Each structure stands twice: as structure tokens, then as C-alpha cells.
Image 1 (cartoon, rainbow, N blue to C red):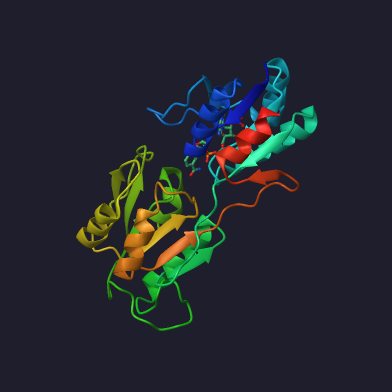
Image 2 (cartoon, helix red, strand yellow):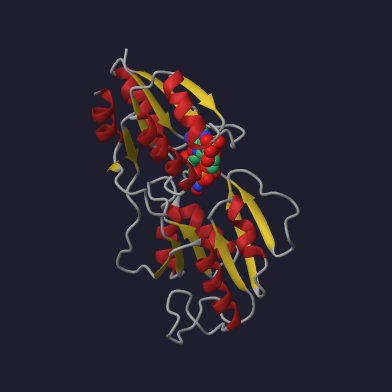
Length: 265
Ligand code: NAP
């Protein structure tokens, strides 16, 4: 029986596991083990890190894996690099499955930045010059919330919180699945929640908390797009953190169906 390892933690990985199991492939899904109550895929599941590329290479050999699909989140860059290295070393064929990124459309006011640190730098500029629009550094257009503290809707994940907490003049509504490491500073309100979200709910959140700007990362996918629609409707600027680049030479598909066809062999 063909044996496929899926590096998971995403909806696409679960869809792929179900598809391959239905095709008679033996699937092992791997989760990082960070979420306390994860949504589980069908089939065999293992949890926890492998111990870098060396550990993963050893695991692939010991478990006689025929094909490896990296279906991790687009921002799980360490796991993706580790998978590429282990695959190259062992000769196990590797495919990366990544949902497409989000695209700016009419009515959106996005500023793309290459990293979380750049997003924080942009916020610091807006807080220092409140007349500035978060998406247009050189134009003096009015920030939606007016003067005073910049009120930020932050959805970049709990581990990114320290990048943003020290910014003067910035208040954060930080939404995450799991609580961030304590202590949480006074200028942060944590909202624990897990998608999918509705446009109506996101609109209410933005209004109720009088939010001025959304900071998010280009995760893509339908589960969390509602905030972008609500931001567009309410004229809220968005600072969008771009995805980290993929390792050179890896093969990429954007749907679980394409990955299933490849992994079936
Ligand atoms: P990361 O920084 O790339 O991974 C850090 C380490 O965690 C890896 O080096 C690996 O440890 C272990 N790891 C990560 N994914 C794993 C997996 N699927 N199976 C086994 N070990 C894994 O990744 P991350 O950003 O912490 O994300 C962790 C997991 O959460 C990913 O699987 C991802 O799909 C999921 N997730 C991430 C995000 C996000 O925004 N980053 C959002 C939703 C879901 P070793 O080096 O010891 O092997």
C-alpha cells in the first residue's frame, strides 16, 4: 500500500487526507501539536516536531514513506524548509500544497509589507503621524479614527504579538485561537476565537471596538476572508503581511484535488 505523509494543520491538509484515504492510500497526517483541541483529519495522525530536517529524514525512511505533501500553513516557513531539505536528502518526492493568496480588489485599501516587523514599523509611523493613512505613507489623507491612539485589529497570530506590543500610541485587539504567552500588556485586548467568521460579525467587531486599521497576514482561503470584506465595506485600511518565499525548486499546487492526484502516484 502506498504511504503518504501529509504535513498538516490546515483545512487543505484535512481535505487531502480524506481524498487520499478514499483512494485507498495509507495516509499519515502530522500536526505540530500546538493547538489544544485541533480539528483532526481522517486516518492516522501523529503530533509534534520531528527534530528538524535530520529528524524528518529519519522518520521518512523508518516509516517507508513514498511521497510527502507539505500542506502546512503558508507562514509555517520552518517546517516547509525542513520538508524541502529532508526530501532532497532522502529522495522522497515532495509536493507543496498552498491555498492561493488573497488579491486586493476594487474598494480595498491594502498596503503589502514583507514581514511582521515591517507591519509594526508602518503602524509606528501612523501612530507618530496620525493624519497619515496606514496604506499610503506619502499622502496626507485622514486616518479613519482621527487623532489619538491608533486602534488596531491584529490577526497575525499569538506568537507575533510581541512584535506589536511596544508601539507607543497603539492599542491592539489581538484575535487568536490560543491565548498568547502572559503577561499581556495593558494596551492589548485578547479575543480568543477560531474561524470561520462572518462579514456581519467582523463588521460589528470593527465598529464596536472603533478599530482604525487591520493588520493581517496573507493566509488566503475562505475561512478568514470576512474581515477583509468588512474592512472594505467600512473603509478600513489593511496592512497585509506577504507570505514568506518557498524554498527554491519545490513543486507547488493550490488545491487538495491536484495534490491527491499527484500523491496517489
Ligand atoms: P513553523 O514555524 O514552520 O514550525 C516550527 C516547528 O514546528 C517546525 O520546525 C517543526 O518542528 C514543527 N512543526 C510545524 N508544523 C508541523 C507539522 N505539521 N508536523 C510536525 N511538526 C511541525 O510553523 P508554525 O508557524 O509554528 O505552525 C505550526 C503548525 O500550525 C503548522 O503545521 C501549520 O500548518 C499550522 N498553522 C500555522 C499557522 C500560522 O499562521 N503560522 C496558522 C494555522 C495553522 P521540527 O523542526 O522539530 O520538526
